[in-house]
Image 1 (cartoon, one colour):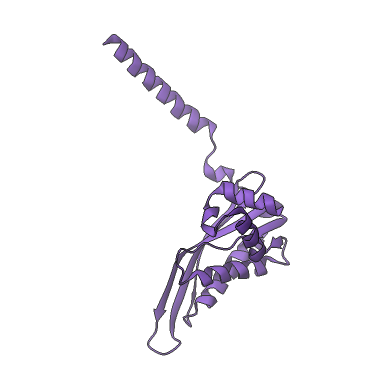
Image 2 (image 1 turned 90 degrees about the vertical axis):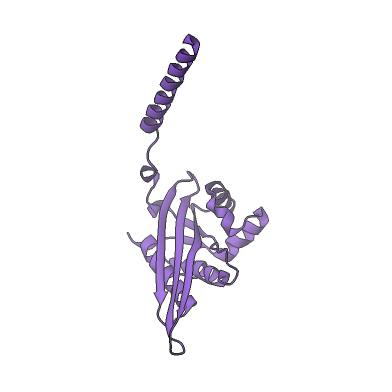
Length: 184
């Protein structure tokens, strides 16, 4: 009985020590993010979309985002080139949710950071008149630094096109995200 109590107290002390040590020694996730201002070469990966019917919107969105970022402060490695390297590595866009895979991809491409994205939601409401309605696209985008694996940027963007065009909504979010990434 005495040994059981001693083991219980010892386990309790170890648990308390771990909790205190972990909370004191590990910075919070927000403290680990940095500004993307030091990024010179940015690889823009094709966006993930689990729905084959809307995958074209994801492809168009990542392509347009890469185009909008060109000529800014980044040297952009376009989604088509990134997709080729992903094929060589056996990665899909959904695999890039793993920071280790995104970093490995960036290293192979010689990038400072990798921009990944995924389609969160696509909706299309049809209006009464032909060509009327609303198309909404929600995309989650993040930028990971290759050298450290730290998240430099993460944003969810929702855009609508009131003519009902999914490509118009994708264009909208690409403009929105690019302006946020290029802001001083």
